Length: 473
Image: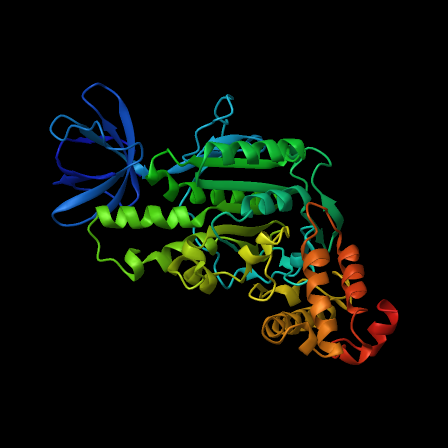
């Protein structure tokens, strides 16, 4: 590859975060450029589009002080890469990968392209190992499996950040070849097989939110196994397109080259999609649904499909993307397209939050499509699937009875209906509303069976009689 920089001075137009070059030849998609201002200051950019008439470059630090007539553009001949080594663990960077913790740059063992590629379906290994989050509504009913991508659908004002911080503090993974491995034991730089790391990519968050995450991780003593990338709300919008890709490049290095199990948290994907829409508008593209680019599905897939397991590799990437649903609308293009690509969703409820229930997980619309692969004998417990089905079934019936009671009143309910109503209330306040307690899976099972005692045994139609006798007695 020709790494000799070539210099151009043919900026014809500036639009938002984009500049347009005329007459650019021998230029490649994704190529990085240096933009030299008349003052000598430099900005970075990336080739976004190549057409016969012009080449479009997105400027990473903004175009406010660029002079179209006197600014020079130097082509680098290579795409954007990020330097990696195991010393990256415990570090804090901005959205473009520059250190924010006052420490020098990481001395890289290698430099990898941030674009990456989705895992080849032929090489993809089936997720099969249970990840314990310590949250009953997830572990018991919507189980997270190692290598899965399970988004959290939130609404405005709901505590998605607090829930994710709690999962990062509590999460532990069980592998077939090792005991339950919890963060905090040993030093991550040893990169021992089965080690657990967290890569956190934040897009468009406030300084207060960034401080909350760092303080939470430091108090829980998990910062030494965490890599944090923070694109703040007042940082250039264009950075948000790079942050998740840099974060996933780090995750791939830790997982597939250093045999670690990596939990990737991306927040907030709604801010990422808004950045996509802004860039698409600047490029004068024909908009799709609600003004978002028509290629947004493909773009999101290039991020989400980088999670998973690879045959022959010890490590894995498990992804928890967070997105705020505009107007709490689950049919909005962002959650809608995300739901098509990912393997389920955890939905937060504003109604439960108003009742003071934390974490406010609405288990009825929530779903983990890979749950059955990570539960059962040797993974969680033999009764897990049937217990989850029974809890779900009775709670759904209890919610229906609650609606009925608002019409006919409690006096119009049968004795069985009152038991369903009691179960729904107890389930929400005791099972879902656990607060910040870290429950292991055995405690979740015990509580689930305790709640089933509210109902007569004749109503337990989803669990085998032998399980009722063994665990429900």
